[in-house]
Length: 346
Ligand code: HPA
Ligand code: ZN
Figure 1: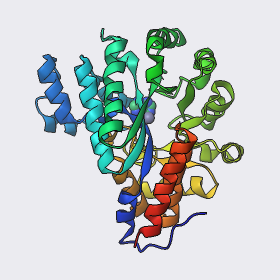
Figure 2: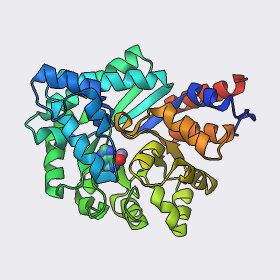
Figure 3: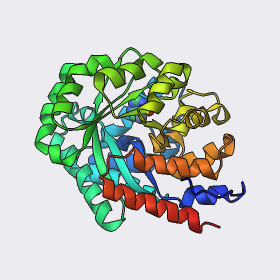
Figure 4: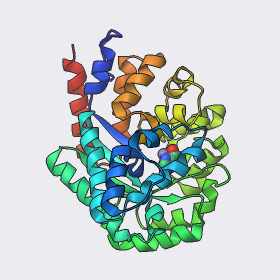
């Protein structure tokens, strides 16, 4: 049952901020704020082609996914040491806790770092230590999902998997990100089949800029358990029925879609359409340092622009727990916390 009582429009932002939620689509390299990029550049003696934090921030004007990825990969070049990866993830987890994120599954892009000579151990150990500390100190459970860069080859994805396997107890799944159009899921069918045999959770970006056909192949060939973005699915009625029937969650990122011009404005976003069709949609921040908002900004700005109410807020938060890769007892405990928040909100 959805326990949401009617809440007046002026109280809705407070409810959105207070409700416990899970974040399932955050690229940890996309949480690097310009201030931290500058601090790490200085600490590591890395030259970056911007004179100030303001100049860097003013470069964050994107026309599509690729225009963002060029700046995003440049920003990540300041990460060299284990402590850098720890500091980046720690900053995100502290910020997420302020937004009442109680569980987070963090994407990381090892190939962006190993290509620069940074060791896989450096990347994974730094991120994992921040996740462990968040559990102990912030009351926020956090896990890692390794993403393969889809603009690179499947052979390189296999090499990356081999390099990461010594640390397999430190990440729970694999995903697929970077430039989507021209790099369909089927390019990675064999490496995903191998990851499936190894027992990893499987997710993939599909239907962000790419067509519904990419969502179909992510489901049928990669056998993903969740689709990242997936907003283009609304162009295909049969796909919408499949996603609803099989309860395949979509990790939707409204401010990302706005900044990368997937929708012309937030009022045109199809989140409500996805929910009305019975899909397990969730709200996430994607690359919050670049897209102008963390979790609660995504919720409050989207609810201000789209016709969504307290019932939708409950559904979205509950979906985030249903869609997460946490064990059943932890999931039940978080749903109970959510129910209590709604029952006592007045
Ligand atoms: N899409 C694809 N790749 C990415 C993204 C995204 O939104 N963010 C970081 N890498
Ligand atoms: Zn993403």
